[in-house]
Amino acid sequence: MEAKQVLIAQLEGMREELLDARERLRHIIVGQGYIITSADGLALTYKHDGNKVHSPRVTRAHLAVRFTREGAEKIAALTKDNDGKYGRPVHIRDAIDSEIRQIDESLNFLRSCV
Image 1: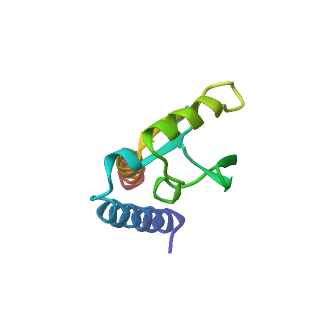
Image 2 (image 1 turned 45 degrees about the vertical axis):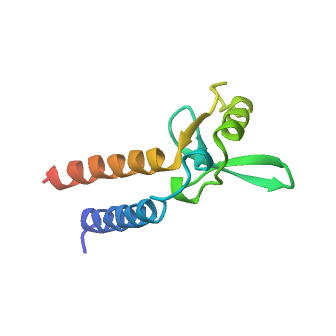
Image 3 (image 1 turned 120 degrees about the vertical axis):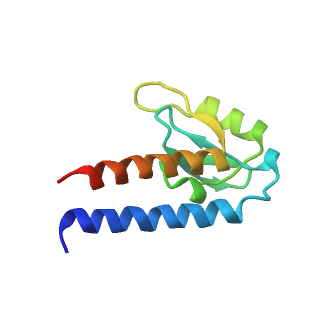
């Protein structure tokens, strides 16, 4: 299988995984479904010890630790990237939809290449 076809297959698999996650989360309580994204829109997850979170790292949106809106706002205000830009609280469904759009754009680009 050609490298392009492998990449398309991997992206299609990721897209299906996100669609499944979005369906599972459709009944999530709005106030309890927030994650933090980097200033560039990458989903972040954290290690947590009791009531403290630390060690942010990039993950897929549906795998990120979720918070209340208030909690996400507080943590985002304390999360900076290497350029000093703060994180943003984003609802999990919006973050998943954003990842799906990015995958769709990549798939469209790959399919248009000869």
